[in-house]
Image 1 (cartoon, rainbow, N blue to C red):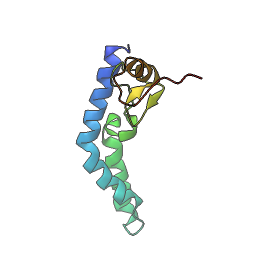
Image 2 (cartoon, rainbow, N blue to C red):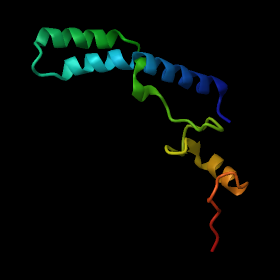
Image 3 (tube, rainbow, N blue to C red):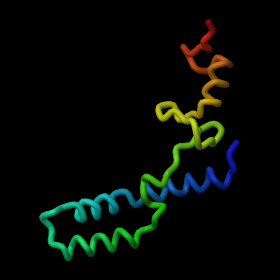
Length: 101
């Protein structure tokens, strides 16, 4: 089980990223637009730099929903490899069986 503080910090980052997503996308569009004047682009860059770092989407870490583990996760299932194996072994994931040969 991961530290509770690490899990909570990641939840705060996800919440902040959702709050600032629209404003951040609008500013990034201005920065990337070559047709806009250099002064406006620079001003947008400064505003983007003033925004909180944890408001960026790429600061959010993919964590296991069951254990909070940060490594070895399957994106589709939002589970770590260890939690996935435990759930599959106990028969809680339909159609998934442990391989044997």
